[in-house]
Amino acid sequence: MSMGKKNVKLINREKIRDKSVVGIDKKALLISLEQGRKQPRVAFYSPYSSVILNYLKNTRPRFSISEEVASIIEAELSRRYPVVAAYVKRKLPKKVTKR
Image 1: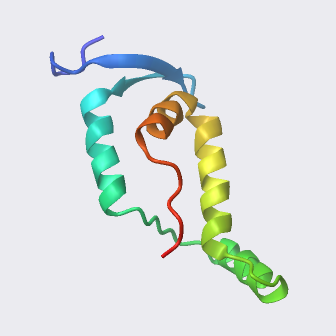
Image 2: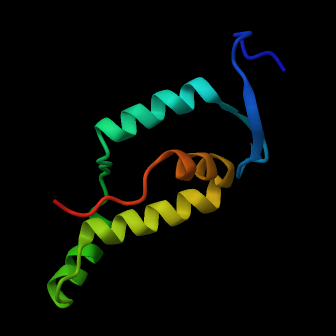
């Protein structure tokens, strides 16, 4: 398998939905960890999700949209990409308390 760079080390392989095999690039993972630490926010456009989450916020005391979305996304990413998720969990500190 040629990836174009000889210094790229493949740590592990992971099957994804389209059944292709993806190697984990250590260098890309380290860059991604740095980027995630500097800018941990994720944003997306979804009126459907927004309506549901705002409904929950308006009907449940102390409901946190941010906590709910983070929980859902983290669980799904761990399910879809277990190898990458395992490396990230080892490298990132436990969840930081709110400011």
